[in-house]
Image (cartoon, rainbow, N blue to C red; front, top):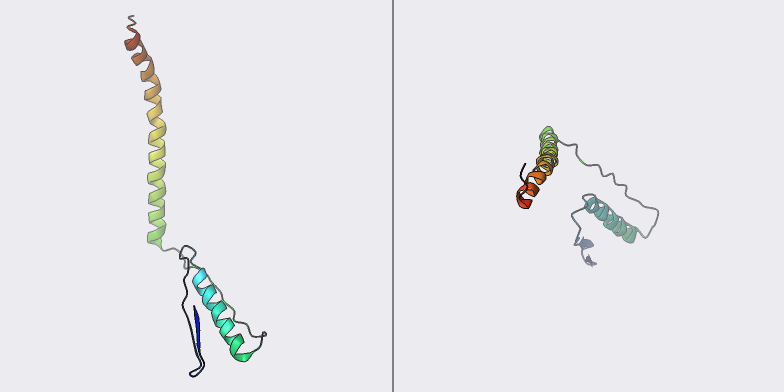
Length: 102
């Protein structure tokens, strides 16, 4: 929503942004401010530049990511190892089911 108050010369706008993409908010604000400046000056030559760069991950976040990766790897490995005894037990269960004696 965009509002222009001609008596005071104030411009205001309300932005509804998808917060999944972190870079959309500064880009949208840049585009709106550029449109306001072009409307006030009546020139298409004016441009506002923007640079969006995320902050670097802290050591705590890096450690947390490493821990999550380790837990996931251990979980997948434990599932893989559970198939070995299950494949050996099948024969014993089949013998018991068929009443086969040695």
